Length: 80
Image (tube, rainbow, N blue to C red; front, side, top):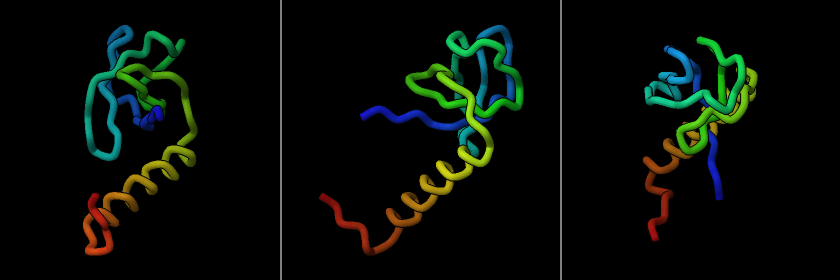
């Protein structure tokens, strides 16, 4: 299974970006995404921006990640 994470571009020089995903900052390449600019919300997979998404869609994904994290911090979690 592959997972692409939505993140906002906060720094960009050539095709080297710094992105922010829910407060986590990391580097990504925008080589595959023509016209990327600061402020764009993009999907990151394996360190590369693969597409742009709108903020509403990104928020839905970020909320799901938060729900998973909150669930993992409860006694209802089964390890295994």
